[in-house]
Length: 168
Image 1 (tube, helix red, strand yellow):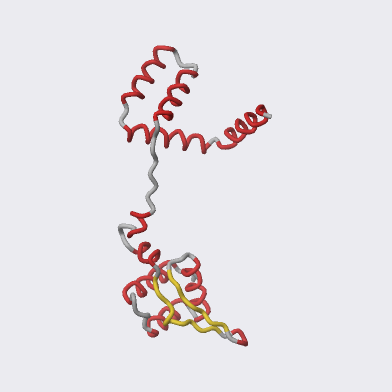
Image 2 (image 1 turned 180 degrees about the vertical axis):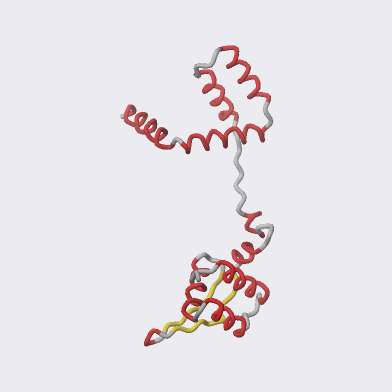
């Protein structure tokens, strides 16, 4: 059996979600302890979930290596709630990154096309099509170009090194 069983971790989160804002029932955690195969494994899972910011909990250590899980201080975090929500919760709304395209981006794409080895007719057609594209299509094109660039990162690093070397 896997020490970090995802199904049981999900059940722990669900238990804390349902109990929120109250503390969970100790009987529920006795069941999780049995399912996981012992108290130490339960503590490991609680610390793991806490380490990812999905819950907050307190584990007290005593002389002789004995540990105690303070269920009164165990609660699901907002990140944990968002994790369980099908819609991603508020985190999905608050963590949106907006990318704005400036006219410089289109100008740079046009200059790349202009400098290519493509026949002049085709260059003119590509530039004309580029200028007619809606914003979403240009974003998509830029993301595709970024993906391509990242897939050839060693080549890009070499180009950057060469350019920097030539500057100094």
